[in-house]
Length: 477
Image 1 (spheres, rainbow, N blue to C red):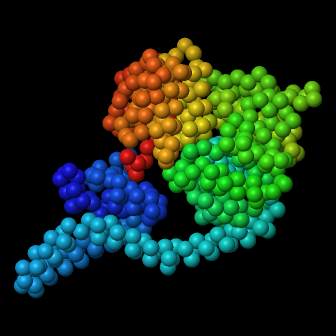
Image 2: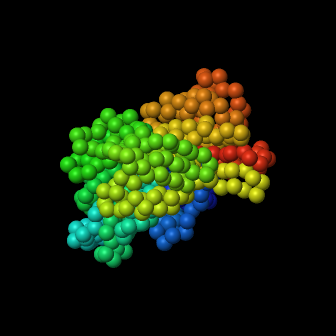
């Protein structure tokens, strides 16, 4: 207890606070939530470190300025005040100094945001909106709790076989990120594909006002960001702001997701691993080399093969194929496009090391539907030992316990040989789910992810498959 309290007086405390602001993407609400949950500030920078950006260094300087001002005030009181009360003031300053610093950093941040950042962002976003309004490209918007980036990249890859296509890089899915991308457009693009991020209600509506989509894809709704949305009903309403905007224009909906399917409206086109629109899907197969299936309609057959892993990828691949055909691509172009789809960074991305151990990097997969899909994929693999490494999922809100117990039960039913859990506030529930389902494999515990990763070469042999599921940022306990 005392050690934790004294960590607020560590010389690294100001830097830790600025790092917390950086890791929270300067969201004051998220920063203060993290601050009040933190007990030991000497261990804040674990997975990542403070990055010396101009903004970060300026805030760090302001932080130290606050410290020196308070020290100067203390010395002045000690020097000038001759009453016994000066010691009470000094104790109060010493006691409150960490809080003055933590909250004091918010003040310059607010000033910077109000006086500089917001006006500049408004100009950038407004110019982007006007530029895009004059752009003649077909604009596709993608909304959902999960699978947005994968859907965007599949569409971009397939449609590029017959059209000039552009899409924001990485996970650029906010007003500012998309606006920065719009600045780079040349004007001759035929199709633009946008991922619409949702963190709070009305986010998708505002993004629709910016990108003005002419068709959309809803990849699904689940507990991702439930901590921010507070309820699944609000999550559904926010994601379906895309459908509200599009009205009677084409909207593709993931039929494998319960909440998305239940909220499907008249005219929406449902896709899953069995069909998409009027196309049926036959002979679905998946293994460590990729996924294949056949699209059939009225005697027409289209055999498709992708390097993406898992039967859950068939729906997005089939939807992309139908969208491409409807936009004028030929069967051969669609087939070539699907064949070029590859696993994306940190999304069930296979890597084989020199020892012959296959690692499936799924560290960007932080949602229940994604976890369900990868466990099903692991269950389909035979003649190998399977390792499942996870710190659990973040921002599950009131459903944290239920979601993680279900993960444990699913792992037990899949007979995964070894489950490696990182100690934190949620993995105990995975263990409870494993035990409830009478798990027969081995559970291994580690204090942090880096230690767990370092142990893997000593636990694995040639032919083993190791799944790294999700990442656990420093701001979560």
